[in-house]
Amino acid sequence: MKCPRIVRFAGLAMAGSLLVVACGNDNAEPSAQTTKPTAGATITVYSGRSEKLIAPVLADFTAKTGIEVDLRAGDSGEMAALLVTEGDASPADLFFSQDAGALGAVESAELLATLPQETLDMVDPAYRSQDGRWVATSGRMRVLVYNPGLTSEADLPASVDDLLDAKWKGRIGFAPTNASWQSFVTALRVLRGEDAARAWLEGFAANDPIAYEKNGVVRDAVNSGEVAVGLVNHYYLYEKILAEGQDAVKAKNHYFRNGDPGSLVNVAGVGILRSSKNVAAAQALVDYLLSKDGQTYFAEKIFEYPVASGVAQYDELPSLADIAPPSIDLSDLSSIEATQELLSDVGLLTK
Image (cartoon, rainbow, N blue to C red; front, top):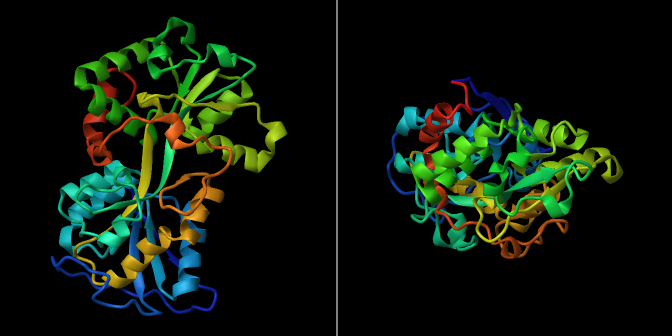
């Protein structure tokens, strides 16, 4: 496991040396109502979201509240495994995961506290833990990015099942080690069962998909015409348009509809550790991420779906109601290890 980096996010008026957060064993359920967070408090956040992505929103939180954040950033799965290993001795106050599966794994280890009902009520029940132990902060949808010069809109598949057709042989890009791809496969297992998921993956492998390191590389390969289509998250296209301009980008997003597994909506989300000694400050960060300022950042700066009411989604995105993504308990996406074994078995993931 890679050693996570530690970064300090401080407000413009805040200064000082890195504080040491005491570790301890405290199994009491945290309650944001019992203690008021104070300016100058420090919380330790284990994050599966990249430093570059969330640095601005964390800095804004610190500037507005005076609460500083020590960020330990890494892969969501790695950070979840670290939390399970550390148990109640973890210095972490809050887990900020890139995906619901990692949150589900930490929840299953009974390491997350119950969040206040008023916090949970800010988010649709589909995007929070059924036991109230974590809550989504933003959502992203799986899509098929395509090059209009290589495939017409009329020929695009209506379902991920249509990608098994021989006409797509050697024309599909994907990122086999990417967490979002693996979450899609996990959802396929949950929705259809192990045998059906294996059958789909075997058919997909038989079509000789082209493996790339990351979603962004898949997107670029589609845009350049190296492959016709690619399985990615929706926001990668908008990131490229923002960076290069609409006229420079040929690729477009194609959305699967009517409950198709190819339109899985996964979420980034947060949970407070039961062992936290800084519960009120950690809760303040949760509430900030769900506030208008926090949700506007996710919607307008990184093109994700806001999950709390009162903030409009990026206007280029279709509504979730229009797409009708598959219904799934996102906590069930925690069985990533079984997914990785299955992908290895069918030759889509090298151990």
